[in-house]
Length: 196
Image 1 (cartoon, rainbow, N blue to C red):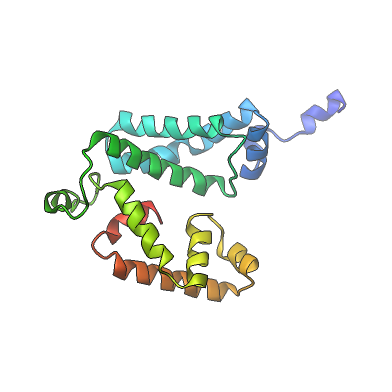
Image 2 (cartoon, rainbow, N blue to C red):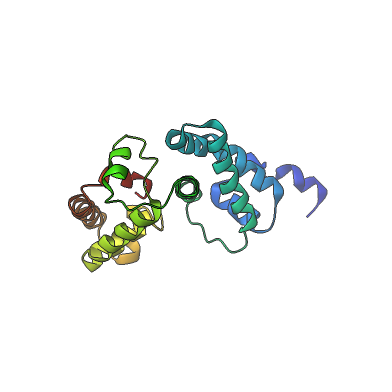
């Protein structure tokens, strides 16, 4: 590259998320710094909305972003925004589980505590197991569409292409999956926004 070409390269804050991820995997510190600045406030809002403690929310975001850098060479991320939001929700649950005793979800006292909108006392791991079991019970195409959407962060258009379905059919499968999960997990459904 000729030195005069350097001025023609896009500045890091003009790069797409995909381009930032490519540079991140090459240990580009400026790409990591841009991701940090681009997503810090959004991730902090997610964490603070659940924890309601400024320092705890900051710790969660630091944990998520530090993990992104540490695992940059092995992570396979399609949608950075979705990945970071999900990772932040999981980090919130991990923090809560470290602070609270391990109690079953069907314990009446625990259920009374989690009736509050912030659901901070939910046992994340038990809820995750229960959700996983119910997802496994979904009809095959319905389950695959749901997992592509929620776990892999695919758009409806990407799911349609991958599964050779129309976008309308994809939407129908997602609606069906959410309806069945809402019925089967009605006692804890309000808390599943962390996973969805």
